[in-house]
Image 1 (cartoon, rainbow, N blue to C red):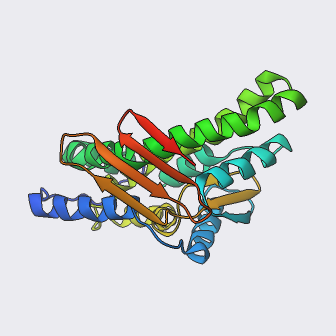
Image 2: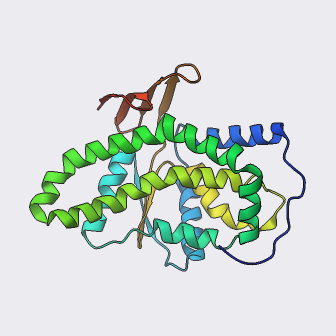
Image 3: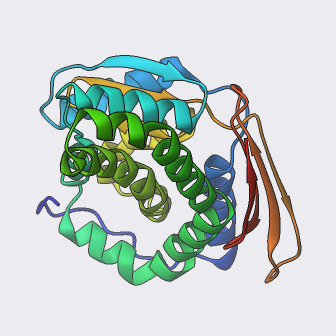
Length: 250
């Protein structure tokens, strides 16, 4: 994180401001329908530039499963995951003072709620089911070709990125409520990525995008288990009970 002195947001946020902002980011996180890949690619180029990396090439896929397989194939060929590097470098352009203010003012109201709801309703299911699918479909093939430790290294690089995107969305949600602080605009590339596409993988030379779900159906009352249906354009489908019981996948 940077150390430049930044303008402060001095007035507390009203309950309505926080509620509206929370609803906006939950809508972003649970969005369905076609991704805007052109905007996502422009945002990724900007983020790589901010991180001091060369402009990447792009692969578009129709589901997190397809994106994961593409990422695994490239990592097996020597590509390196740079998700943490890109996000760290972009976030480093926002000062420590801003982060401290965000944490003290809205962390519990915004970060925790977005993280909990998105993780439990969608991303935990996607992560778990993609993990199972890729493990079952790819593990034996890779195991026969390379040592198990190499496979584990490849596999963890991919799925760490899926897992980290819940944290990333929640962090952007809490930061972007401070619209009156100019430094926050330095996060625009990451915000646009979150708004424009589904799960994505950042490799040293390539960015792999997944389409957003075609539809997400959540059924159930607050504080109860929710039935979840998540469908992707290529037919990858998750049916589950949130947060723990997995029902079916195809």
